[in-house]
Length: 355
Image 1: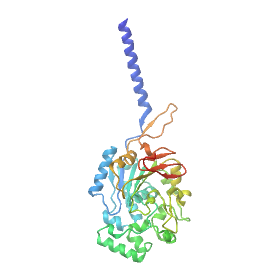
Image 2: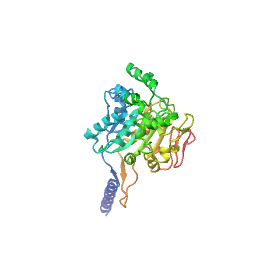
Image 3: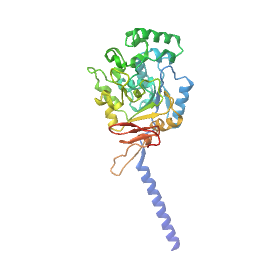
């Protein structure tokens, strides 16, 4: 009798364990294999540099995904002198030709590279879908001054920069010869910007008589938009441009936070729609332009490159995706250790220790 009792108990334990394993297997399922990512570097940089190759390698290792640096032209020189619309055209052709991206991919953009990435999302007809878009120090709303020629040691670029100072940033010469002129937005000359700047007004759907609903539809197709701003930013002016904030038209003293701009309020590209859906993360980190610490990179970038999981409920519905950075992915209230708390109707900057 004792033997039969022990055997029956063993059978019960085995059945219980098997049941738990089956339930677990059916309740948690991977969405798919991890999506690859492409990195788009900023101005005065190139994919072959040790900094960029090292960064792509670290992101790939930390996220257990495959990463590629997408080069435009010959790197540094092209980043300065090829107009951004042409850089986007080349990037578009490359992503469509990469078989590794056919099922979708994520984008990590650095500085000027974030605008090329957004150009792929909005302008690239027939391209594979972009899942998550991570913008690090990107001038999403433009820059309020022409980049100084001391940013580069290429003498020819310095000559072009000096000519632009004489001819004007919205001249045909500047727009066709100097990539940053495509996103230079002078608050005191918004008329000239909207009329003659060739790239950013189109990307941001800023021209009242020429707004393209296709750009908005494609942009709102993103699963997550991660906007990272450096607290001690000195290259992007104002630094709030990294969040789509900018100076009020006509002056360089009043800065509009992202939700105060017309671009957001009138929802020209779908930023408001994404935000209301809880898919925009406004993140501020310590440091200077595009210099994220490993800790911040692992906290705010890597989670959006990793495999996602879903939980299948009894009703057949699914829970929200898992695997994103918990500190910045809740729908109504989010916060991060560097001082951003996000509300549905306002953005409040707080200090660490007050959270």
